[in-house]
Length: 181
Image (cartoon, rainbow, N blue to C red; front, side):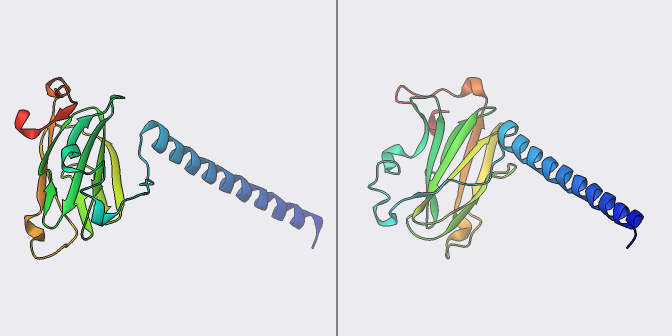
């Protein structure tokens, strides 16, 4: 092999190395922008619960279900997906505000999606499914179960009521219910 051929090969390899480094760098920048600036993150929350004690644990007892403004200002909606209903059947959340949806199931695998949004997750017994989102539009959004969970699956629907931020008024205990809105 002559010297000019070796130099051509080395030059071509260098160009491809630059192209690969540029592609990897571009992907890394896109991941960072999506995660930090746009707040689009893969589900990475792993919390375990005991399905048999779900209604007895502090977080998912009946008194804690629904929407609540936490002491730190975080708005969290806690929902139990059980055959064949969501408890509560309606949650109120403010528009244009970061909110956290937390789900758990005591019985079988369920799936939820909130129509017209990118909220979509599986609810597996023994785990807490958590979604962070910002609702951009106001109105009543349907939240059906999208994982077949038994004969009453088609009746398993809840409502996410998104209200303007000015109309979101929690009570003295930080709770907000659909009947009050």
